[in-house]
Length: 140
Image 1 (cartoon, rainbow, N blue to C red):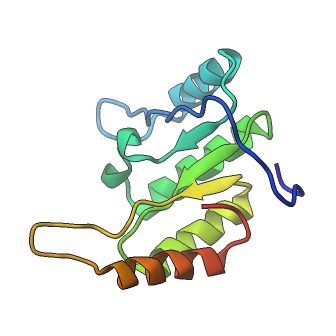
Image 2: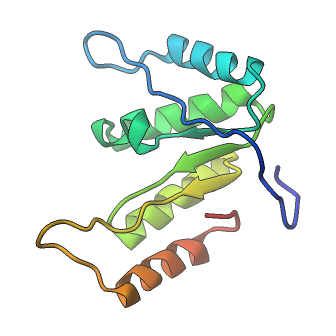
């Protein structure tokens, strides 16, 4: 959806599961089949690398590979949301810029981690999202 000044996304945007071989490496052939199945089923868009997609099992190089594969394989057939979550504003912003540069329609970002003893204030969370938003031109 690049080029639209105020795109509106509606409909079904399922989270695409990340597929692996038995040895834990990415199964890129089955990943493409999964993407095609969802698009052929009539979805309005896709979301990759969400929590359901095993994002926390992937290294940065695997995230890059999967993002590039998904966006190139989708080839504009539907908008793709790329999850770029990280506790660090700088890392999340850099991930978001890379996703944007590869063609993501928008990014999905979880708030910085809230653990039992590790908390962010409302002001810190606002600054986090402002920092990510300032780094990109696509919606969060």
